Length: 571
Image 1 (cartoon, helix red, strand yellow):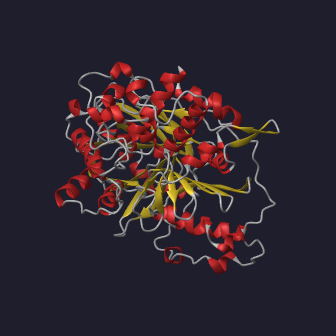
Image 2 (cartoon, helix red, strand yellow):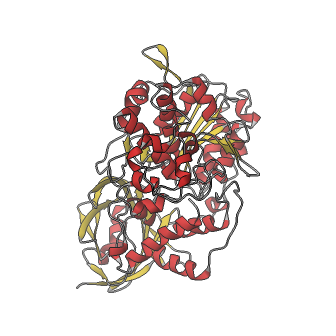
Image 3 (tube, rainbow, N blue to C red):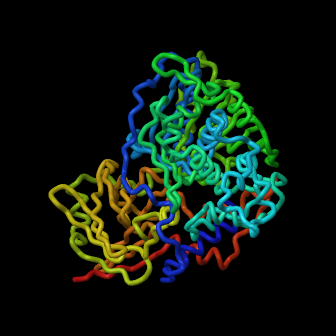
């Protein structure tokens, strides 16, 4: 996703906050409305017999957890086909699947390999032959050259992209009628709609849904169940994003490729994906210019310089497979990661290639390895309280209904709003209510009232599912008494959306008859947009173009993403 696409997303949010609702798309990327709990994986257990250095693994995970730019949600490690580590960062647990973003592209590549093996598709097959109904005298000449292989390598040259899809009802038709930026297979240009067309082609030629195709040929043999995948307006799975997987699902898919497409089914080794496809899809098909991590691009899979390959998604969703080390690492995160050349992937590569990891006999005390951050040593403004003390402090503010007249933060993070096209005008009213020893926050926004239970002592999150715009979203909620950087007393509320990358933080400052509400989110989307401007981005074969965010845009982004609003008590 390049700068132009990001500007379009920000513009969509800007239009909504300025009441230009008629210019916004409806119900985009939001076709799975119900919540499904992640299925357990009883077939894979933690192995106590490993040659890896467990203390070094603990050190690595500890450092990831301490890095606020990584925002780790879960990590799993397999070595030699054995599960070595499965860890979730509270309040995340194994019960929840997680959005994968572009990591799903690599799963589509698996399906293409299966389809080719079954003679359903071929690499040199042209889109115009698969979709003759969209061929006409008006079709661009370059479109006739687009093949399955050019879709796989992101070299199709087609202009129809992710944001264009926001406003289209028929993605196949729009893609086939799109402009061509350059001759097919001459340049690399990352475009999720290339992946969508691969899915559409499999659906067309197999005469079944993409999920059904994957389940019958892959997932059912691997014990991967309850997978959800958002669909386009025509009911075809999106492909390039919209897939939710559990951490163990991710590890299994990485291990499948490490096994060169083989899996154990009913105690027998079964080939699920052709070994030649695994080799070709993880071989550099396109060379890319990156100084540190990326060697090139295969078939919807990133090829790394350390001999590994990567299934990668926005905000730090990764399956790292290193055949030389017999190692698979799966990570779910809310990181400040745009593309796979970021900090998180570099840390994974360094960890996987460190000799200390493979010396089981290396004895050390982890306390001597891990340097404790300075902010852990300084107990600034540490507040200790029990339940009754908590309610005594906030008693004057219970049951008051605070009304907001200006644009305020929503309970839903902006990045989640944009992803599902569920834009909010923000909180209209807010009040707190105590029922016995439980605390509730009652919020009104978008003409809907939400009752959210908040944990408030001992960092105990309260798990719940809210129905936002008809979509069930699992969430964990907690609030604490705290001070901000200016020593102002506040009530800090954390709303962690367990299947998404967004975490909403509400800072509430009380006065006699009003409150001030400051909304931020993690990852901070304003900072993320800045990174997207300032760091590497994909354009042609270069990964190193840099640009600064204009001052006027920074001002608009700040007003939208970090609003500060005053709410008056309705007494």
